Image 1 (cartoon, one colour):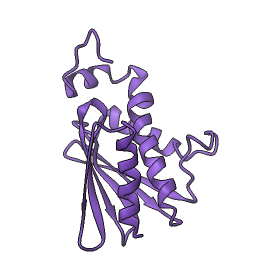
Image 2 (cartoon, rainbow, N blue to C red):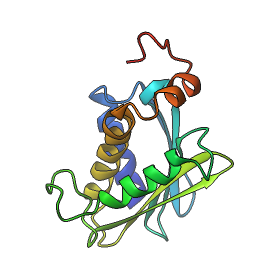
Image 3 (cartoon, rainbow, N blue to C red):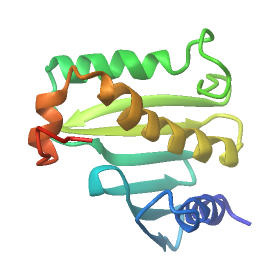
Image 4 (cartoon, rainbow, N blue to C red):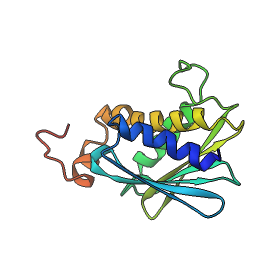
Length: 160
C-alpha cells in the first residue's frame, strides 16, 4: 500500500470516529494526494501529502494572521516547543521522526510536517493531535480572544 493511500485511510478513520465533520480524498496520479476535512470552527482544511518529499502540508491552519503579528510570533515559538524533550512523549513531536515548519502567505498560516523515518502512521497521528492542540490549547489562552471572535465570527459572550 502506498503512503498516500495510508495517509488517506488514517484520516478517513478519524472522520469515521467523528473527529472531522466531513472528509474527502483525492488521490493524484503520481506523487501524493489531497484531503479536505471540515474541523475546528467549521473550517475547511486542505491537507496535501507529497510522496516524493514525505511531507504532509496544511495550506491554512490559521487564517487571517498578519505575518509580523504577536499571534504569529507566539505561534512559531509554541510550535517549536512541541518538539521539546520537556514535553511528555504523547504530546511531543519527536524531532528524530518528524520536522515541523510553518510559513505565512498573505495571512494564511500553513503548517508542514516532514516525515523523517517513514513512519506515516506516527506522522498523521501527531499532526492531527497538533492541530487539535493549536485550537484547544494554544488559542484557548485568552490572549487571542479578539482575533478568534473576529476571524470566526463568534459571539463574544459565548465564543466556545
